[in-house]
Image 1 (tube, rainbow, N blue to C red):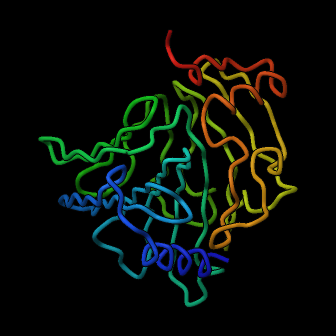
Image 2 (cartoon, one colour):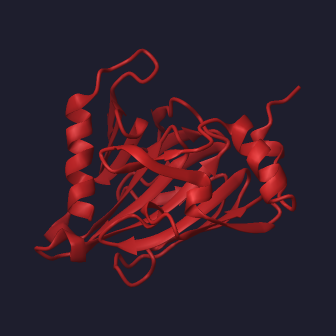
Length: 233
């Protein structure tokens, strides 16, 4: 349930101890607030949210050091389990400490392992990734979160959309890896996550670093280009 997710996030924020690896940071723009903080459940995390949220209708973005790139959508309604939803991707290669930077034109850039995400100054909406995206102007629970990554210069795992919770929390659910050449490989969630000993209800990663993920995918998804996961010689 997303109200449990949100509560768990703030509980984990209260439980965190700031480290030198993820110093707290905040960037405020014309239409957004971006925060970086260290959390128990998510590691080093960035939240980009609009300053204006009329009637709680808004779309915001969460990124963390595990590679998770989550689109959070809220619409008017008293029941958060019915009025919120998430579309979750995992982007590779991963970057342990995302960096926030305010550009001269007021846009926000957030560093990723494969490049940068750019958010619009006035609206806080995602403008670009290192690849191609489609962003719906309408904020709704009827359009899968309103963000489609149609290509990515690294490797992307699409864990899907879910109202009231996060799709990857279903061990029997399916996620799809896509490489830069648009080759795809579908896996079950429990091949990527394990669901025991979870912090605040968050599944753990079976492959917390890119090298171990590459070893798994080399056998499981031999059609994928795994070169983004391997460090340059």
